[in-house]
Length: 244
Image (cartoon, rainbow, N blue to C red):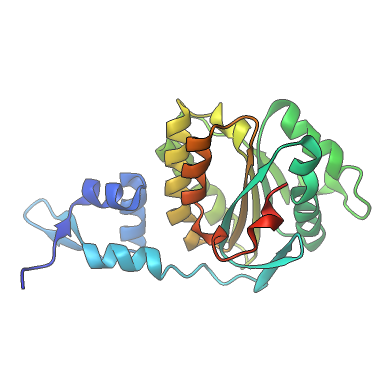
């Protein structure tokens, strides 16, 4: 039997669909096993370790075992795609999801801009028992936008945000990504979907529950199929709950 294949940093990044910077950070922190070779001490990674990194990626200890979304108890971490075809359908799951998080003091992040971001702010501002102004001031609720236009930039930005969110105490982090808005933050739709594939790997390192919202009127069939493939956590659930 031949020796196991070893990948360099660039090959490992391609294998996991993340940036080379992510590979270096995970290696330096001890999350991803690797070795140094040669006089230049270049990194090498066993393919089996990369597979194990994906399959056995425990999130940092959350304070709750599950998060309720539309009557379904989701484990932490979870990364889902939700599909909707009307403005009301787009708010059905996400506004209660954020409202519960704000009441519990859990970090909530919305990726959107313009009218769509304002729609959330208006809706949450009218939910009984939710002090949105206080949540924004304290950082419990924040709106996120990506700069740079590429998957690697967005993943690096999330790693900074998520690391900061869990720095003080273990906590569940709630994220909603409005993908029609996110698409405008990337160089192309293909780049946005490449980001989704990379986020699926990265997110498993953190105690997150993520709802990636796809408005069916704005994405074609091939894009939605690729999006569903990038969210395998959806497959074991009652998918009807997440179609609005």
